[in-house]
Length: 312
Image (cartoon, rainbow, N blue to C red; front, side, top):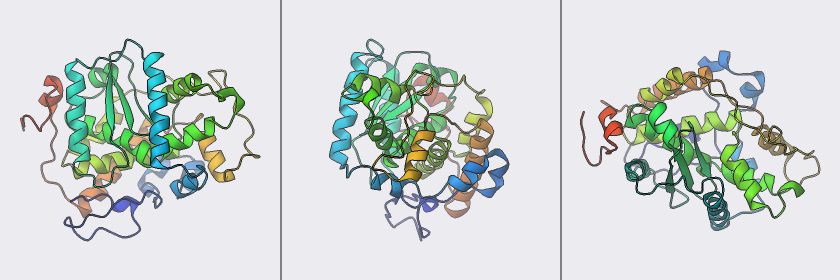
């Protein structure tokens, strides 16, 4: 089964024998214990976003999103990431194994996810519409210290896809002449942008639940943010010379327009993300306790998933 995910359901999951698919349109705010780290905008804005996003997505099917994501991924591989993908690296096989561990306990993934290793020391990972995930050597070797943390970050990127964040950003960008018929610019922007604070925290919680469901040690999620010094600000669209036009005339709800625009300008502080990780883990553990969640420090060092060898 899965214990996914009462944080995203209107009703609690009664037991672990029932398979209840996630309804990402039902989102509750992060725990109140973290309010001190959040702006007023976040306190009032963490509401039901996904249902509104889908209403403004021009009726995209999963197939259409998959096709768009493949086009963006292909453009990145020809351009920005040309020569950096290393499918023969041990990291590639390891990433695929941990992704499989996560998806094995998730009953309703929308896509056949593909994960790519980028042989570059940038501390980054990102997702594209349709289920393409990219992980850089930098985040694997400089930030993460065990398999549980890797599982959480993979879950986070899966969440951006499952909660329609990537698809919403793509459709938003496609509205404007600056991106018209320019898949290269869209691809570059999606690889470098930051999501909004709302979406990052939603994906943090969703990703942690995926890792918890797969019996990884959820406490490790908080440790990522406690040990990761704040990175330099990533380039937003305005910083990249791409204007953010007035969206009042677009055929999408104004609240969604504002939220998607916010993707380009905000990111939650690490203190907020550490707090939300801690409180989310506490809630999950209270409802669906996992004893001796797997950590896997040696697994990460050896690039050998727990599915191949359990060391703890």
